Length: 510
Image (cartoon, rainbow, N blue to C red; front, side):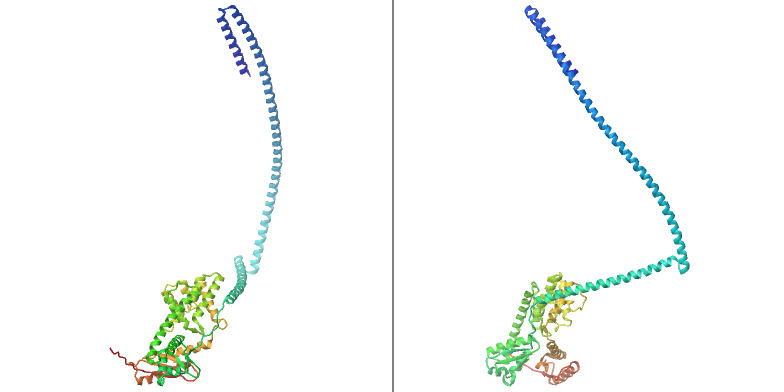
């Protein structure tokens, strides 16, 4: 306010001085102007003084208002400080009371701790006294008693743990049996397959009974040549317009059926023609074997197998086990294994392939020494089948330890396929094994070219090499084979042993 007042006074004084200087400067001009200037200066001075007074009054009033406002704010702050001081005082009183209560509690706790310590000492003294009394009465030290108690406690805990373990194991086994029965029941319900229809005979229709005479030939040479070339027994009886082929080996029977059908259609049945037709029939059967293997792989959902694996597997089309066709059994096992593997979360592809190939060795076990599981695994390994599938093959009869879930699935699938109602006929399998044993005994002698069990196992016909076996040796061989059969086999009735020695001379006219 004083600064404003000084500025106003300075301005007024400046104006007055300026007016006086103007007045002095113009005084020399005219008196009138000087008088007017003096009057104007007087008026300005008067106005300045009036304004100064007004400014002074305004400044004082403003200063009074500012002072009053400051005093009001100071009073408010003073009241706030008083309230805060009162709150602080109240809190201090509260803290003091709490401190006093804590001190009283500490004192109480200290007294209680002292009492407890005294009680502990008394209890320890009593314990020592009782322990000494017990040791004196029992004749055992505390360490010995502790070991005895721990041993008894350990025994009780061990018995309880064993009981719990047996209980849990029984519950798990019961649950596993229930779940496995459910999975197997579901799988078998989903499976639809044929029952056994395999037999050991085939019927070839002929146009008339006159054809039977052609098949027999002069003095029976045609029928003998056909039986010698195929190893199949031809039964020509009173059955109208039909010839029956009998052989335990289905491959031979199929070759003979195809060959005889071709001969009947052609009408010419000389011995030389028979050999040519039998060779062609054998080639056709080989082609059908390959096709059968490929179709089985496609049906089972196992693409990408090696051609040699497929060809070998196709041979199972003409192999039976207890009357069950082995190729159908393999495909059926693949279906079952895939369903079980899907139910339990195993590798379905490994299960499917392992089940399809598990009896692969049965196609070659009559040619190579060894079990069919080991032979099949070796053949599969040779043609780069995956190790997991190879393991399923070689472990499906538990000849080696089973290591994978998929191998167990293949075992189960094999058992289900073979044990379902109508799957197998045990009598047929025993019959076939007896015929195979007859041929095996005959083939074991030196100089034998091939042998055929015919007449339902009542006769074994042996073809010998004429350059190694003469007529006298042929008679000796027949006697030796019959003795070997008597010593190593059990069979009803009697078995006829026939040794055939035939010399052929062939020359070409050019």
